[in-house]
Length: 479
Ligand SMILES: *Cc1c(COP(=O)(O)O)cnc(C)c1O
Picture 1 (cartoon, protein in one colour):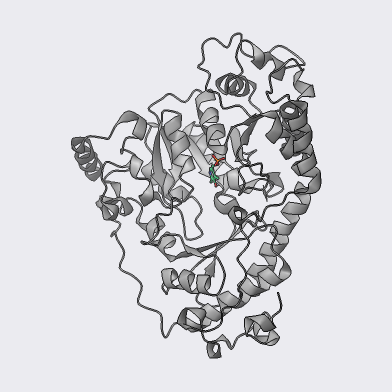
Picture 2: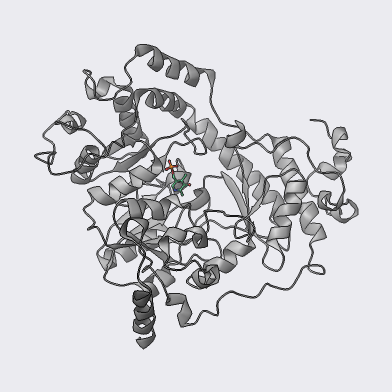
């Protein structure tokens, strides 16, 4: 796409355009920075090569679609994929399954977390996280995130109760949570950590792959993730009992779980004491994923270099606060998130969309974004959004300030330059002079925040009676 077509001179499109103010914003009728669609997976911008297509076709032509047919584990696409995952993550076991959500639920169930337990998870994640907890028969207990949208350990400590039997950490939007601090805290409390590493496949924290810090790590291979085959997922773990149970639960019936232990006796005697949930992966998708694994390093490098380029070019921009990692480089780079602390993030995101960049204000009240906790209606005994927001006032404020932009691994340098120019242009027009006052907080941070914390019963267990919620308030206020 030529710059001329945009109606903007090349120098105005280049990075570092400080004088964006004299260019009318597209939201006010000016020319947009770009006119071609912003590349995202749901418009087909995925990283799939002809070799990957061939691999899938070979599997289709084999007519062997079921992973547990007459072949040995090491001869199947699923088996080979799992072997490659073990090598990649340096973990003892890997199990390919039907989705990231089922990988998470299987980890919780296989670890023997008693149904009905509370499991702590952050208030900023995709709805799949609390959904997986519900699927495993447990109840999510939401915890605040900090200004960089990482789980707030101090808040977790404040909310701690002995009913919490596990912590489900999320590396949301590919940014590592502070695993060292969180695993230390979990050890202190005597509970396991599970990692929703779904959006962080390949990202590392201090040289260690995300997904390998907890008892088990779960990943997705749905089309928006760093390996993509449509739908699918996997879990990695070093715990052989957890693994064997997860294999059975995922649907390895009539002793087929033994195939996953070709070198010795499996650590469980029988599969008859577990239900079979049919969360298996199939051979076609495993073949596609195996081929994609070969080019995963290229894809990861693109995510990383695009992100670093954009973040560096905007680091001096006042008025926005770019999400910071917990350690240098501890992110994947699949999304660019910043807050507009003194301004109107909803307007900012809308103005960016008009400039041709797909941007979303995470906490917008005009958008049923399921990455914000107040839209997880199934969790709460009330439908009153103000009341729900009051449970996590900090998370609410940060999400209302946050703008989220997907960074596909297929972005070109020109795409990145468009993003940089557009953010500068909009930020220039939304400077402190014109920004509206900080919106009123929905909660004061007093005892109301505890009103329904973790007590909203899940879909599978029916709504919590109002009396229970009232009791919870009373109990908490006595502290
Ligand atoms: C995509 C995603 C999931 C769900 O993965 P599926 O394969 O769609 O079930 C879970 N958690 C997070 C944080 C995600 O981004």
